Length: 390
Picture 1 (cartoon, one colour):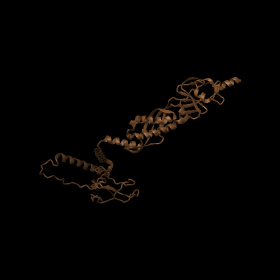
Picture 2: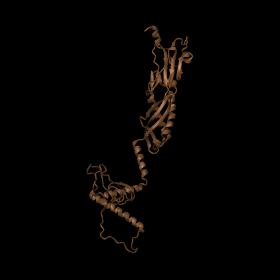
Picture 3: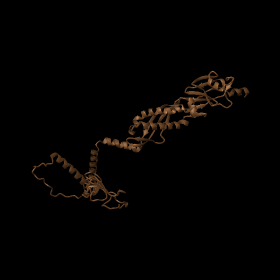
């Protein structure tokens, strides 16, 4: 290679950047220490690009998309900074940066840690959220000064984590200030998104960036809160809870009475069911006849001659009489089997200790008269003196 060809190779005649990537934000045009830009060289700035010339650490000329011939007329700032005597008669030395101004779309954001929120229905909650956003460089000079520095190139990944932190912080503030109930958050994604985007844009502007789109895809509640909401929905669907409990009690009594393999317990439950049905029928008949029988008002009621007195015991829940051996109370439907308060083993009699695990049996009950809860196998209520043994 001759000397003429060597010198020719050191002078750059065309300066341009063909972006073949999807995430490069800034690209420094490669030049060696010996290479210099030739006077009247061509500068090509493609769409969605801005070219910035930097001379000795100072921002010089900025070029928007287009094709330029580089000489003193088109480079006034660089000419004044260099103060060259011959005004680029031959060549000049400078750094050239291409800034990508296109939109970087479909960027993901999400909460690494839960967002704390105070809710009027559920108290303090931990929320998690995620979504997408798009941004672009709208002030190339500011971005070059504040973020890029003097690297050879800069990608989205190098700034994405910082942008995500700004977004999550702003989303947290927006949710807290909006004071939207937790069960209504899903209906307010667009409103929260618009509020968040306007606030994020202010924080992005410091770095020469702007957010062009922001979306919340989901804000999830803790599993326990979701279960509570499901239970509240079920309660609303049931309607009158008193009628529902009466229905459940009747179903439990019927199932116990139909349990053929229940032995004495099944027979006792059947007896309890019979007593409950008989009482219900009696109340219904009394209501229809106004308390009178079908015969003459002066005719005395005939009492059964061979009525058998069935031994009873007080219900463990409502203290009403329950036939011996009955598995459920005919009045309230509660389970009549005594169980260890520690291991749930069936307890017979009134032992102080469980025969299975040895745990102390602190038996509890409720007075059927005053509703006071008592502990221990007591004969009389300590609150009102009611006979607890019936």
